[in-house]
Length: 259
Length: 259
DNA sequence: ACTTTTCCTTTCACTCAGTGGAAGCCTAGC
DNA sequence: GCTAGGCTTCCACTGAGTGAAAGGAAAAGT
Image 1 (spheres, rainbow over the protein chains, first blue to last red):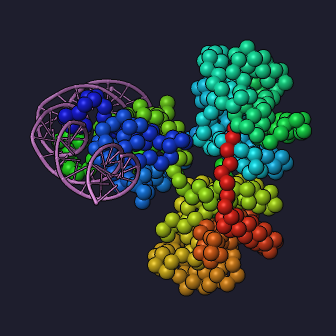
Image 2: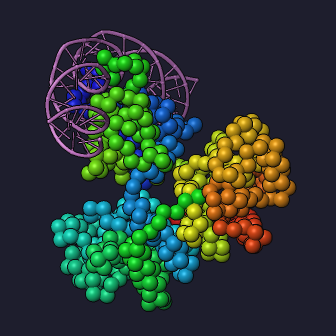
Image 3: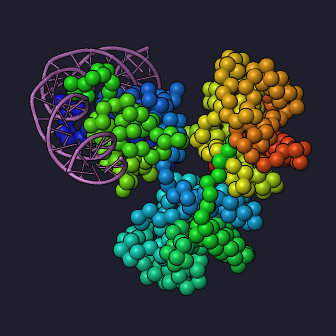
């Protein structure tokens, strides 16, 4: 930008991105002052940039004065090629799985040392579920997370094992215990959690394998209130769906079009 | 920005937004030159801005050199409060509707004189469907579009009636004929299309009404290969789901949480 | 009712970040 | 071998961007 800056070297574009990046799942709505604090920019600078972003539709200003992400950015963001092939292929299987189990269904991939949720179909509202599409959660406390954890490269595993943060009283925080669980995941072909992320929610998950039938590209999971009763049934349903997705990924898939 | 500009008055932020806005559904991937042309900016300027956006994760550069929207922007875009209440409430009903009909299911709202698709569950791949979440299509050529058209304010209706663009040989392009169809939609409570948007695809749609039971807030539709056979069955299923969504919108809904 | 605090917005003197034509480079096509 | 087109770097020029300071408006505290 022009002169008189306190942090030379920072471009306007990088500042605008800092403003946008100040928003996250726990901060979907921010006042000017908080926005400036989170973006680490002076208030007047933030104000000017935010105003321009509002003009461009990238941000919206509520009547309360708070800023939220704008519809224009929603539009543009949806154009990002985030595993479109996988999501398109998996979509019908997720629907089937949901129909068969009535549980919340998740499709997730690993993004560095975190789980990134690509798709979700909500099930029974009485089971609490924190993750939505776009959410990132730690690898050790969710079903899909443990699957992706078990098949992650060694350096990522070490990184994640070094930071097993407690989320609930049931979260596994011992590296040794987690290693044993991951061994079992690889042996049995599925992972489970019991209130390790959220009290009142348990989950089961299985890996989705790529064309070679080896590499794990994603994880498929369900969240239920209690796993003891029908663990076998859920795991079977998950495995059937995961196999189907894997097979479809191998087959050439035509693009679908129309209204 | 600094001096020497050919278009004084345009800020860096507005230029960066122009670069991002150069992407749309038909241009998800752009070379530098095309990006510059679409953003109406000189190539070196576009190059510099795009490079900064890549640094910030807002854009990604493919090995081919083409730019695409980056994952960071996907993350941020998903935080936009685009009818989150409606989408959350409608989601389980869409799943049910899909399970019952096996057709592609759509949830859409009107955005000025266009249909904006909020949710989609893909059905049988053999029926071609062009719309995805975030798509905007004209009001006159789709099922959900006609419903939203029929219940739009007069000025919007006039605007849309003045530009009935032909999409396929079956698209209704006569304002008089469209008015008659809209009358029928209001009378019968549902709309249909027959290959008016895409050859090989027909659709049926119904309105979703707000708490007052009058105001139409959204439209619910299905896309199938042929409507003649089971129009009645589909319309009934649609109406049941739409009623359910409308009722749930009235009821206080708790937020769901967990992994 | 008065004071204090906090947040939003505007102003303005200062100056360096941004600009884009031109040139160099590389690759693809003929 | 030559031409065309796209990508990247260079660099002289300058006005867009900066942010402390101050002014206002509104909420919180006394």
